[in-house]
Image (tube, rainbow, N blue to C red; front, side):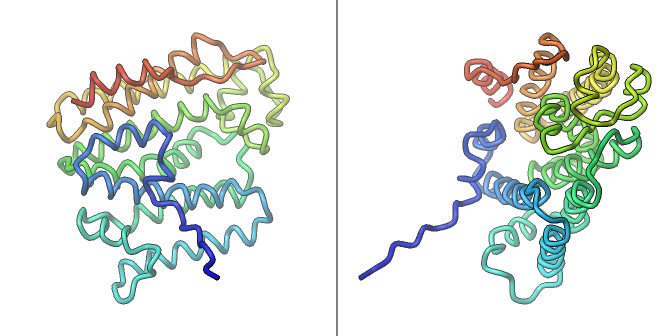
Length: 278
């Protein structure tokens, strides 16, 4: 009697249903496949960080990923589950240090539950979990070195700060509070207990400087993309437009509890896709 074995989902399947998936679908196949492999790597290490189990086993899992990445750059026999990622690394000259930076960022979430980091630590976190992904991505998109690094810096931070503002309650549910300490203090919020801080009537004051930083990064990213070859920035233009619209809708909704979830409507994303993708 034969037994059906369920295959692991492909990198594209793991991304399906996300705005990332739609944005990457417009790319030529080689670039699209590479981006799905980067996404799959990020999802795998992010799932470890968000697992919620004991810290030591999760740190060991991230350590195994470090070893796997190092192995890909040393050459020799490659693990079968990383064969496609190895192809992407080879084809687009992806940098080891950017993969490691992503792992370092995920480790920050495991070693110590993040609650009200200062602006410097928040910026480091954004660089690792978002801008490092951008540095991998711009090489796949085919951008020139310096504009690509600048775009990764600004757009990565803009997207991550938007994520933080969008996911305030979700993060609080697992004990995290990414709003910076200085912004909370300026608003007169002394508690770093997520539920307490987010219930404060002054929470909008604490969110305002994060919104301002995100908007500043979006503005810089738009300047870089406007000066770049259009074909190389189609995907980041889509992501930037989609997430900036989310940010604007968050601001319009307001920050006081209860905070209704904010998502883009399909017709809104379709308009962004048609405007920036072709």
